[in-house]
Length: 105
Image 1 (cartoon, rainbow, N blue to C red):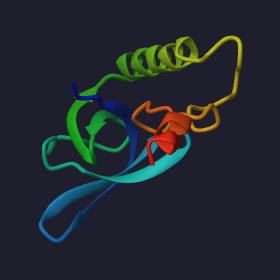
Image 2: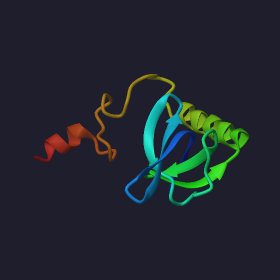
Image 3: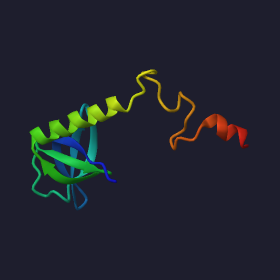
Image 4: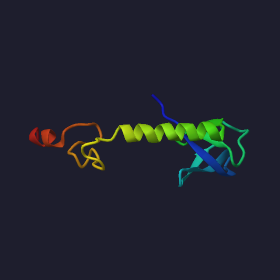
């Protein structure tokens, strides 16, 4: 499954022969390739997957998507232990119990 995150286009420029841009993702700015959306203009929102803008979207659709992503993050939290990440709880990025891994060494 692919996940694209909406970002607002702040700047558009060329790098070599590529159309590039600086996009804002809720306060975090990243460089993004805009070659797949040549009609993009400053102020628009684009869905970005692995550094490539794959389509343009309205501000309303971008806000709705960001709201849903925030809701997913909230629902994914452990209500009994808020603020504890998987790493702090003894699990690595793939969900393997680090104590179990240590026992197998």
